[in-house]
Image (cartoon, rainbow, N blue to C red; front, side, top):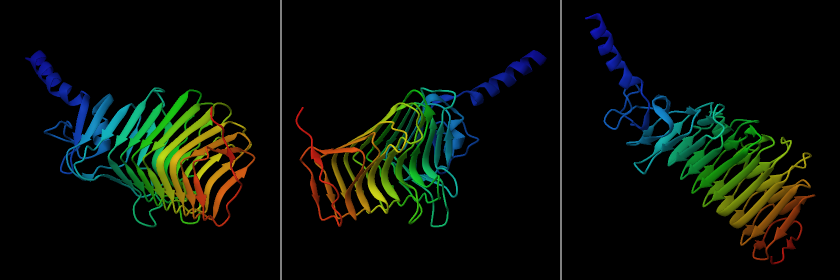
Length: 322
């Protein structure tokens, strides 16, 4: 009889402790549930502990699902059921820290990540510390206004020696960074010696401290390679798009195509001798300074519209056909 009781107890415990490859959250769920389709959890933190590495958390209905720390490969997705929100105050919305899995791939899709009303001083919408790849697709990240070293929609600062990838598509970054201070929409600041590859497409950054920045100043080797296409950067206090190598002389290579950069303090900013900045099919207009270049190499493919900037800045060298 005792043996039978032990076996029965194990049978009851085992399903509850197993991790599923797909779990579900709902605004009316409960984190004591197994996070199944018919018994969903209520929050992303509640679901992630019940989701296997490489699995997916899906939303069933609109709701606020809570800030979450990700330590394994995971997809967190809203496939169009209404707003799937992460509303925080004084902290990060999503922290990606796959310190035990250097090949971790994290996908965030269809989320609204909000730092709250004025005065919340929330840190960063998404902070990437460790892993291989972060993909942000169809997300809105807004109102992260804490001061330095935080205040970014996305802060991508892994310390690594491997390849690191950031892919952003069809997403918006609005009102990130304290007014008149540091912070911004998307900030790439790695350390160590990784090769960091960044792609931003079909996205916009508006009313931030700055729109996009890539800075290799903290790196000891490797490079940062940036591709920005079909995106707009408008009305950002400190600048639209910046590529910075500082005193590190670690290459920052920026390729900008079909971008609209308007009404920023500085439209395009290249700073440092290791910066290579190429611009094509883009509009740079109505900025305080249209183009600013300090020691770097900035070239145009001769297909841009650069006009009506208070200070135009240097004339770009036309890149020849190759």
